[in-house]
Amino acid sequence: RNIREGKPATTTLKEAFASVSAGHPNDWLLSVEIAELAKKEGNSDLVDKVLNHLEKVKSNRPEIVHLVDNGLELIFEKTNA
Image 1 (cartoon, one colour):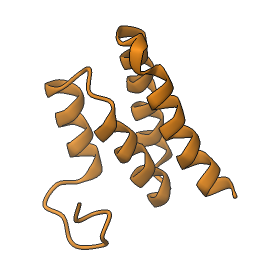
Image 2 (image 1 turned 90 degrees about the vertical axis):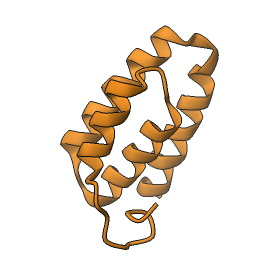
Image 3 (image 1 turned 45 degrees about the vertical axis):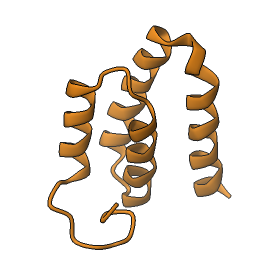
Image 4 (image 1 turned 135 degrees about the horizontal axis):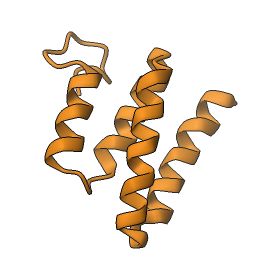
């Protein structure tokens, strides 16, 4: 939340993603948010890691594919518009 609001954060996006992907490997929502924030920061390496993780999540949980895809579409449309 602090990162989104532009406040100092005690955890970096990279650390948050490492924690989420290790501790909650099938979670998608926070990963999508991390991808959005990493994109805003211009951190393409982290964006790529998150997108790869989300592809694995979609493979494991086909019922949420549309949710992940819709979230990512909003992120990339917003930054390309």
